Image (tube, rainbow, N blue to C red):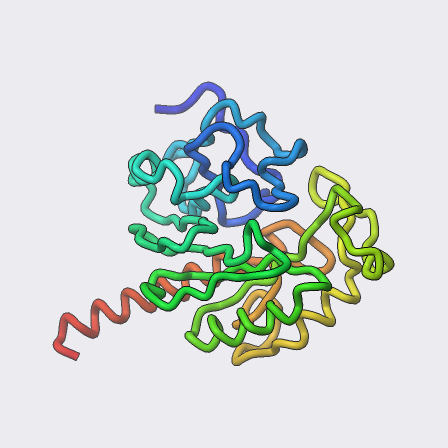
Length: 252
């Protein structure tokens, strides 16, 4: 049935092959530092769940819990999203038991000092996401060595700050006030972004989106339509699973 008032979609996804779904309401209790979802600039008021219809989704991939966390109220999350044939789940908690691929943020709450190196049940991991700034690059190196070494793409998500005090004084010269989609933040300058990403060419050539280690968006754009990294990684893991199923079915 057609909904009279279509669900409001994330403007970051305009023109892309992704659609957001957030079954929960209210703030996320994980309380990660400088969380866009919990901040005042989120694109909805979070008083109602964001659940697109199948008609609104069409042939796109559903991005579950780009805000909040798919491991919280998990039974409800799985029930709501069972209707979508193409989807992936987002979480910052190390439980990847989902009926579709998973994007794992490995350094959510303790962004600057530690990251979770999970050693079990990695086959469902589509991407490991690392919240990146200029003072946690050694930790990024460890994450890349571990997860990319297991064949799992790592996505560098450059932190944007609303509170200048969250940026150590010695690094502030490399951050500039810049609008990203809807809101203005202190953002790492584009030259530094490129410098960090280009340290990790990996086995893939070409754009940042198709490297084993690449960034979310591009230095010039935060829009998903200019990136395609999630779509690339989703297709990569889904096609791999389909190949393995076919291989096993013939006794490979």
